[in-house]
Image (cartoon, one colour):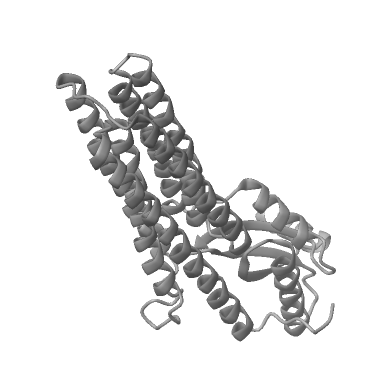
Amino acid sequence: MLKPHSHDSADRVDTALETSRQGLRTLVWSFAVLIVTAVLQLAVVLLSGSVALLGDTIHNFADALTALPLGIAFLLGRRAATRRYTYGLGRAEDLAGVVVVVIIAASAVVAAWQAIDRLVHPQPVGYLWVVAVAGVIGFLGNEIVARYRISVGRRIGSAALVADGVHARTDGFTSLAVVLGAGGVAVGFPLADPIIGLCITVAILFVLRDAAREVFRRLMDAVDPAVIDLAERTAGGVEGVVGVGDVRMRWIGHVLRAELAVTVDAGLTVERAHRIAHDVEHQLVHAVSRLAAATVHTEPAVRAGDAHETLAHHR
């Protein structure tokens, strides 16, 4: 309301760069929080020998490491398009998602192995109250990171960052499970610690399933059907548009790009048809969140007389 807005290419590039900067800041801060949390927990693991806390610590280290591929992806996404990479390198976020899935899977394997080994070869767990406190620290660290990542991810339109935030929130609740394990050992049930370790492994597997599904959808160019419906309604409401069809969208990094065809009056000049196409793109960029650009193809509407002539010709 305070200054004119524009849809020039330069403005879109500036917006993409700013969202990448926000994503990078989020990753740096969340990485620091999770590393501090994991290091504190590791110190308690070495002191107490709790395998449940070990599993949670491994997972927190893995969560911190997921910031690295995402950070690299954000940096690559800031590079300008070239004649070889005509859409830029925004889809590096999708590759980063694959790396995140691999890291989560590896953390599940390590946590399961440690828990099973402790079930087969039981060992005493000491400093139970310290273990419980470490579990609470793990919960708080993950919840802080989750709130930050989800908030920024939704603001900049990064599904990878939102998914990583949800992942951190789930990990926070698995940290609370460590407190239950310490409580079980305290009341005379020593197997509670490795059992909770296995439960944490199961929780990691559920997170792995959700993360893999999200990454797969991005790799296959999946878009929320409601967004397609919104684009069709918006384009159809532009003055001069008779019909809308062939709407396609895909994510490139944390921005959307669209392609669609609109039908206009066959008697319009090329200049007027071009103006309508520009108006359609203008309205779409306004209406659809995170849409960076739309390629609009105009097609002539078939007039009643033309349709009659075409039918007679076929006969």
